[in-house]
Length: 152
Image (tube, rainbow, N blue to C red; front, side, top):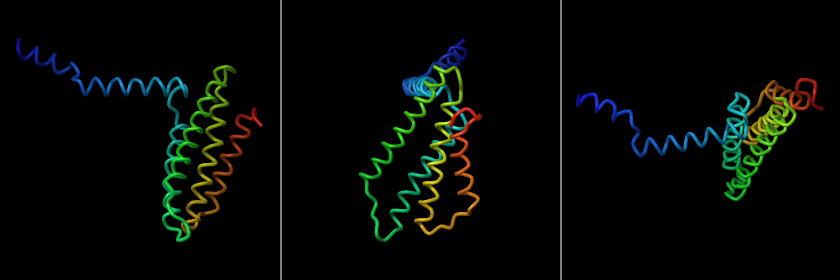
Protein backbone atom coordinates (compact mmCIF):
# COMPACT_ATOMS: atom_id res chain seq x y z
CA UNK A 1 0.00 0.00 0.00
CA UNK A 2 2.86 2.37 0.90
CA UNK A 3 4.46 1.76 -2.51
CA UNK A 4 1.19 2.66 -4.24
CA UNK A 5 0.92 5.93 -2.32
CA UNK A 6 4.54 6.81 -3.14
CA UNK A 7 3.89 6.09 -6.82
CA UNK A 8 0.83 8.35 -6.78
CA UNK A 9 2.78 11.12 -4.98
CA UNK A 10 5.52 10.97 -7.61
CA UNK A 11 2.96 12.09 -10.24
CA UNK A 12 2.05 15.22 -8.27
CA UNK A 13 4.24 18.09 -9.47
CA UNK A 14 6.42 19.88 -6.98
CA UNK A 15 6.69 23.65 -6.69
CA UNK A 16 9.34 23.99 -9.42
CA UNK A 17 7.54 21.66 -11.82
CA UNK A 18 4.24 23.47 -11.24
CA UNK A 19 5.86 26.87 -11.85
CA UNK A 20 7.53 25.67 -15.04
CA UNK A 21 4.23 24.17 -16.14
CA UNK A 22 2.43 27.47 -15.63
CA UNK A 23 5.14 29.42 -17.49
CA UNK A 24 5.15 26.93 -20.36
CA UNK A 25 1.37 26.96 -20.55
CA UNK A 26 1.27 30.75 -20.60
CA UNK A 27 3.91 30.87 -23.34
CA UNK A 28 1.94 28.36 -25.40
CA UNK A 29 -1.28 30.32 -24.92
CA UNK A 30 0.40 33.58 -25.94
CA UNK A 31 1.98 32.03 -29.05
CA UNK A 32 -1.30 30.40 -30.06
CA UNK A 33 -3.22 33.64 -29.55
CA UNK A 34 -0.73 35.90 -31.30
CA UNK A 35 0.32 33.63 -34.15
CA UNK A 36 -2.40 30.97 -34.39
CA UNK A 37 0.09 28.32 -33.32
CA UNK A 38 3.68 27.49 -34.14
CA UNK A 39 4.64 27.05 -37.79
CA UNK A 40 7.81 26.18 -39.68
CA UNK A 41 7.72 29.68 -41.19
CA UNK A 42 7.70 31.27 -37.71
CA UNK A 43 10.54 28.98 -36.62
CA UNK A 44 12.52 29.98 -39.71
CA UNK A 45 11.95 33.67 -39.01
CA UNK A 46 13.07 33.36 -35.38
CA UNK A 47 16.21 31.43 -36.38
CA UNK A 48 17.02 34.01 -39.05
CA UNK A 49 16.50 36.83 -36.54
CA UNK A 50 18.93 35.20 -34.14
CA UNK A 51 21.52 34.61 -36.84
CA UNK A 52 21.13 38.19 -38.09
CA UNK A 53 21.66 39.58 -34.61
CA UNK A 54 24.73 37.43 -33.98
CA UNK A 55 26.29 38.15 -37.37
CA UNK A 56 25.66 41.86 -36.80
CA UNK A 57 27.55 41.70 -33.51
CA UNK A 58 30.35 39.70 -35.14
CA UNK A 59 30.55 42.11 -38.08
CA UNK A 60 30.92 45.02 -35.66
CA UNK A 61 33.56 43.11 -33.69
CA UNK A 62 35.79 42.28 -36.67
CA UNK A 63 35.70 45.63 -38.42
CA UNK A 64 38.51 47.85 -37.19
CA UNK A 65 36.52 51.04 -37.78
CA UNK A 66 33.49 49.87 -35.77
CA UNK A 67 32.86 48.98 -32.17
CA UNK A 68 30.12 46.95 -30.58
CA UNK A 69 27.44 49.44 -29.57
CA UNK A 70 25.06 48.10 -26.93
CA UNK A 71 22.54 50.85 -27.61
CA UNK A 72 22.39 49.82 -31.28
CA UNK A 73 22.04 46.20 -30.15
CA UNK A 74 19.08 47.12 -27.96
CA UNK A 75 17.52 49.04 -30.84
CA UNK A 76 17.98 45.97 -33.05
CA UNK A 77 16.22 43.75 -30.51
CA UNK A 78 13.40 46.29 -30.21
CA UNK A 79 12.99 46.24 -34.00
CA UNK A 80 12.87 42.44 -34.01
CA UNK A 81 10.18 42.57 -31.31
CA UNK A 82 8.27 45.01 -33.53
CA UNK A 83 8.59 42.58 -36.44
CA UNK A 84 7.01 39.82 -34.32
CA UNK A 85 4.17 42.17 -33.39
CA UNK A 86 3.58 42.90 -37.09
CA UNK A 87 3.51 39.14 -37.74
CA UNK A 88 0.88 38.88 -34.98
CA UNK A 89 -1.07 41.69 -36.66
CA UNK A 90 -0.88 39.67 -39.89
CA UNK A 91 -2.46 36.76 -38.04
CA UNK A 92 -5.24 39.04 -36.85
CA UNK A 93 -5.75 40.13 -40.46
CA UNK A 94 -6.07 36.49 -41.44
CA UNK A 95 -8.66 35.94 -38.71
CA UNK A 96 -10.73 38.85 -39.99
CA UNK A 97 -10.39 37.80 -43.64
CA UNK A 98 -10.80 34.09 -42.97
CA UNK A 99 -7.50 33.34 -44.73
CA UNK A 100 -4.00 32.19 -43.89
CA UNK A 101 -2.27 34.41 -46.41
CA UNK A 102 -1.43 37.66 -44.63
CA UNK A 103 0.64 36.22 -41.78
CA UNK A 104 2.72 34.10 -44.14
CA UNK A 105 3.27 37.01 -46.52
CA UNK A 106 4.52 39.10 -43.59
CA UNK A 107 6.76 36.27 -42.36
CA UNK A 108 8.23 35.65 -45.83
CA UNK A 109 8.86 39.37 -46.30
CA UNK A 110 10.72 39.69 -43.02
CA UNK A 111 12.51 36.38 -43.58
CA UNK A 112 13.82 37.80 -46.84
CA UNK A 113 14.98 40.98 -45.08
CA UNK A 114 16.70 38.99 -42.34
CA UNK A 115 18.44 36.78 -44.90
CA UNK A 116 19.68 39.75 -46.90
CA UNK A 117 20.90 41.39 -43.69
CA UNK A 118 22.78 38.20 -42.76
CA UNK A 119 24.40 38.30 -46.20
CA UNK A 120 25.43 41.95 -45.72
CA UNK A 121 26.85 41.12 -42.29
CA UNK A 122 28.79 38.18 -43.72
CA UNK A 123 30.20 40.36 -46.49
CA UNK A 124 31.17 43.00 -43.90
CA UNK A 125 33.18 40.26 -42.16
CA UNK A 126 34.91 39.43 -45.45
CA UNK A 127 33.04 36.15 -45.95
CA UNK A 128 32.23 35.48 -49.61
CA UNK A 129 28.55 34.71 -50.15
CA UNK A 130 27.49 32.56 -53.12
CA UNK A 131 25.17 34.32 -55.56
CA UNK A 132 22.68 31.46 -55.26
CA UNK A 133 22.17 32.38 -51.58
CA UNK A 134 21.46 36.00 -52.49
CA UNK A 135 19.06 34.84 -55.19
CA UNK A 136 17.25 32.55 -52.74
CA UNK A 137 16.53 35.37 -50.29
CA UNK A 138 15.45 37.66 -53.10
CA UNK A 139 13.04 34.92 -54.23
CA UNK A 140 11.64 34.63 -50.69
CA UNK A 141 10.97 38.37 -50.77
CA UNK A 142 9.27 38.02 -54.14
CA UNK A 143 7.12 35.22 -52.71
CA UNK A 144 5.99 37.49 -49.89
CA UNK A 145 4.89 40.09 -52.40
CA UNK A 146 2.92 37.60 -54.49
CA UNK A 147 1.96 34.80 -52.12
CA UNK A 148 -0.63 32.59 -53.69
CA UNK A 149 -0.98 35.10 -56.51
CA UNK A 150 -3.33 37.06 -54.26
CA UNK A 151 -1.20 39.79 -52.67
CA UNK A 152 0.80 42.39 -54.55
